[in-house]
Length: 455
Image (cartoon, rainbow, N blue to C red; front, side, top):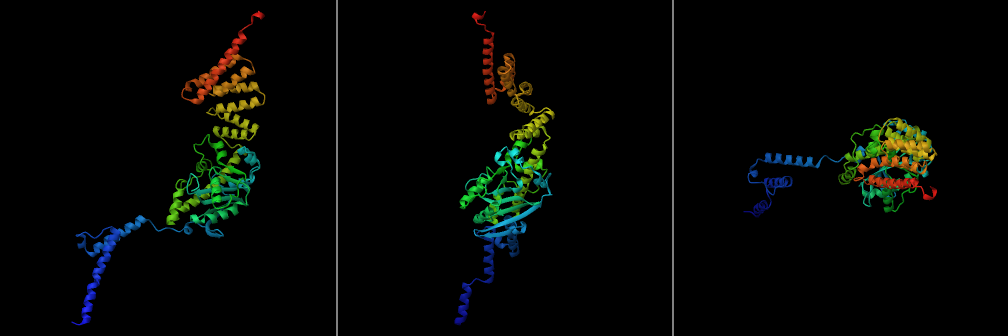
């Protein structure tokens, strides 16, 4: 046998045949896709076609579990990559004409709001003369809802009136390292404005942005600027009637808007975490739309609140009473008194007593004590303990009619005593009325005593 033929035989012994190689590759795929160390004895007898079909099915199942391929952000959100000296971020720019109605509110009303309306709406002297057309509307989407040093604002939306259009600009950090570039660009944007409008921004958005600017060695540009936080006026105007004063609840109840396909605020942090991990923009695109809607709705609600103050648009007795309170806090006493009377004329209700008490306070302030006494008596009849208490004080100190003062105290005691055992406020009221009754009885006894020297 030649040396050459011997060499070939040795090589064949060392190198597996093509069939053996294919078999070992098939086993590797089965281990990877089926999780098997090696096929069972009966499965080794399966035809090659059956084993391959089983592997194709396993591969398809794995692909379904992984979900569809990620969709890039640029395919779903019309924006652009912005670069500055701090790095890159993503920017989205949009606008709507002021002639377009947002729900039931025409945004063109921005140009008709009086300069003193915001001051009346908020009863904050520093906001007197606040012009919504010179303000920036701001809303953030964050990595957490509780705040804290670990919470970042990954999407910051700002809106403003620009001529006959309302513009919205959204700053988005595609990953955490883009925060510096985003905040740098945002600071330049906000520096153009000298007043701010948010919804719960005093408690959440502004402290969060202030912390993020500080961590990036910067300063929030609108720190100390006049700030209209619309949450508080909204509660004063509409909480008596509406169960919730969340922005989207007000949007549905007052603007007549229903969002379709919207994403809830509680889901948004997880959507961003998933985006950072997979770069799939399908859910993230809904976050952009959610943020844009929030900003436009914030602007529309600010316009609506001003309309209510200027035009007395309330119709429900609860809304009328709330508007009267807002006007009273804003020191528009004559208008507030008219609204209280309108609330009473709307019919009986839970706010009849409080409205009577406010009118009585106005009468007392004007020196109309007899009128105030009548209103206190009506308030007491409507179930207001405060009405009987004030009436007792009036008869004790002004009309000097101790008998009528005692009658008012007794009527008040009848209201609070049934609930005094399990209601702390009622217990305190009952205690105060009891002390007043004892004092009135002592005064009455002294008046009935005639000293011997005068007999």
